[in-house]
Image (cartoon, rainbow, N blue to C red; front, side):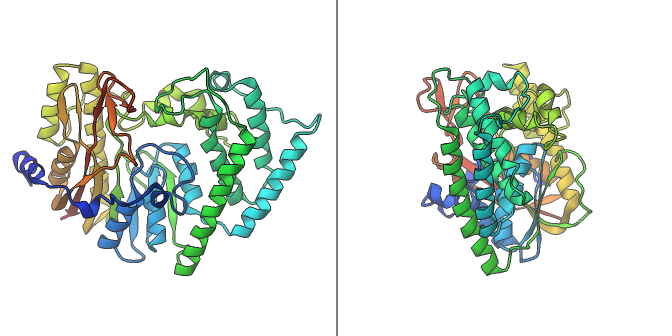
Length: 439
């Protein structure tokens, strides 16, 4: 087991490795195939997953991502002919991932588009307008007129007979909700912009849908050509800090990017979709718990500032020091960070159980600074994993391009922000890939 001092020294000696930075990659590259279907915060770039999966696995191996998010790991694994399974507690993440991993025959989507447009035209006729009951919270974010126009799109989607195509259209609908609401477009926090100029919802929906259809065709053709169309990809609603539905020693590799500590409120960012679909008790039977009990739901997320603990079972002396130093300045923040480390420690224990001996965990993690204290998440993870029964394979330092992640944090709130904020401070200039092997 590596000592905290040894781990800290190893990270201090690391130099950024250009071959892991993918600095020449463009947004078009990171949004290729199905990756650009739906906005998602802080998603890691597919080139990084491709490099790790190619280097450490063979075709037919099982890849696991316990923090599945929008499915980047699962899509790249499928492209490479590796079976994959992901977990997330967010049903929006599951909707996105299920859509992204399923390449649909292009002819099916042509038929689905025609079915949608026919239903949309029908719902525009007098006396045919859809009537939908919405919770009051919807009208906090959407005008009544916009709700009526979105209802027409939403109802028309359910005229599509093919269930995979229907989900495909629902993913496109979910993506445009932010544009059609009064949510401030540049904000990652739930902030209203009451002077916002709204787009035509049908136009923006069809524009994004047609982009997705084009991407799906390229994705489908490539998978069919490689023989990977039927390669298994599954996303399950599960809390990665609890026991996962996987047998002992069954996984060949874990590739994951854990949530950022107290940076993104993932439930808040997806609340528009959670609220909208939660109103539809017929087609989204179990989603009402997320819209109705939203405050309870968001406290379940790893990395959420709403989640606190009194536990000090971090499995890391480095974490002990970080939490102690922050507690002297901000007790509430310290409790949130403590819960993050407790959750990550529990997750790593579970991943040790399911990984095969000699298999790797590859965790992409960023360090930051809060209340003037360096928060060394990568070093903490390395110490936790070492104590659980992993040995170091490689620690990699890579530059993070501002093209792919918000590089600024508000020094007052601690949240990600934009270039115009006078309280901004550069964060996540570097990122670490912690690669360790189960002994």
